[in-house]
Image (cartoon, rainbow, N blue to C red; front, side, top):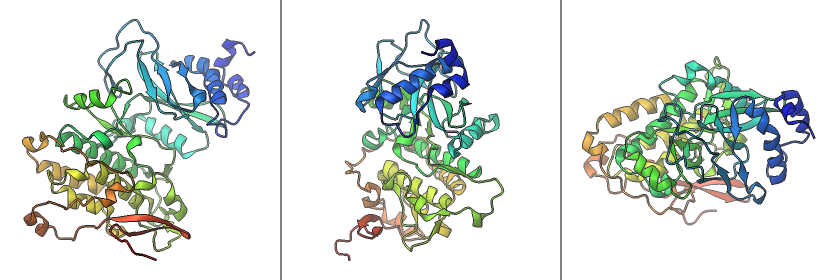
Length: 406
């Protein structure tokens, strides 16, 4: 058995991990051994991994908050608000095996993620860690605190632990203002990434975090109460499918193979490639996929904020060359918000529809019930929803209301 003190050395740890963790990612026993080997290595670098429970079950496993003697100070950026630091509390975490929770020497909760050293994710994480990126006012991505490289196979990023915001898909928001803040943060996140030639490729509810967390069962209820304080902030995370282009890449070379458009969460895929193109514009596709996400998460609020309907249409429109860019979307969304007074922002948000989660945003008519006078003022016809059909020759899109097709 390797002495514990030797496991702080990168060469020793690298030699001890004599298996391919990426091949065995769903093997609970191997994964448990992997994190156990890394425990002293991270401890020597200022991070204590949480004890884990139930990894081998391939179900949600418990992350035990280890006992501390003093309460942490009020969270400051980039750290999160915590509902309870009771050492007896359990925080359930879905089985995302690339991640482990930890606590820093500063008594701050963090998440540690591993990925291949030779990967876009490591390059992007290292780039986002730079101070000039962290202070960019557009940056609404999860902050990167540290990046460690173990060897030629494995690297790690350390991020502040924030809570999941996916529950808004089911529970909605407290006010219109909070819903618009959600959209504002994600639009800025995408504009920031695109400004730095990074495509995200998987904007989805599970990749949005909020600066608050609680016990898993209580989280939706207590987080909505946290929204009412006005301190909520949302970020985009997970760069496992992302790609970064060299900064001087001309537009005609910012294309990617068409098959990569199938990466990510299929619910938000658009019909950009239905004509059979071999390459696609990933920047426009990013905007469209985020538009689909926002159609689902806030699109049902158009009766309260009618300008949302044409704005979302500009994000998901089928005419790709004229689709709004991420930076222009931020500009136009800011103008939209500026038109709303304080009472409009404080309006109680209506409850989200009961989705069946099968391309739900494409089946919802954002224009239904809007004032006729407003609809007449819009200079372009509404974008009609489409749905994706899986056929014998692959997937394709049809009008949402189509019932007969070959």
